[in-house]
Length: 330
Image (cartoon, rainbow, N blue to C red):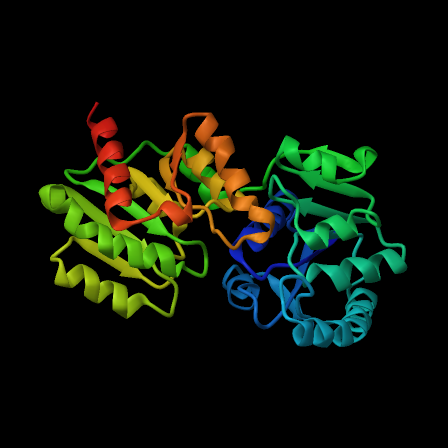
């Protein structure tokens, strides 16, 4: 089987696609093949080649939550993106095209539909994104992860299978928790970092003074603020390891006692597989507030605490970290 996976932009869209590719290639590596299509601006431009997977690029930009001029520019780019997608499809000749969300998936899935190639979309969130809602009217199958998403799609097309998880993180499920003298806290704001989490963690450190010698922090900041965050921890004499991007996230999960992170659907699926307690800070600007809707599913199950971004402060975050440390001791 030849599968083309379209979309990306962020890790939340891309990583389920990588998980799907890994599974297909593992089952029959000599007979199956996968090609990704994304944009040069998205995380896929870096991460897909790092995973030894093939990638083609198209020029396309978002149409939602942008200003009038950017939306107009995006509309003008769309016909060219569809034509480029047709060229890629003619050359690659896939048996199926799967859109994983993000605006890069739109032109490719549309082109595949026009060419009568079997199509599907995979929706990671409880509240579906704009692109997948539009494409759901064209594709053959819609794969969902949350019951709440089903009502947004044509009922006969929906199959709720959950979010695909990368093989390295599935391996984490089989690993015993690594015990340390210190409480290991993993902090990350998604594949691109999060300014709010970066700032608030540094603000939280003084409130953790009484347990400073008992806690170790591993923090993924994103590329823009790595030096600033590292300097903040050093100034507070905190035991912290700071990275712009953690490639071995499976290892980071295995080492962690608890996690502070956003509430993207892919992240929540990974937390569930890794069996880690978490403090979730949903991204307030996420489309239609879908991260908070995602987060409530874990909070209601007693698997996480949630701090809405408008309530977030260094003191509040430190209080929740203390609560997790006390729970770990019990």
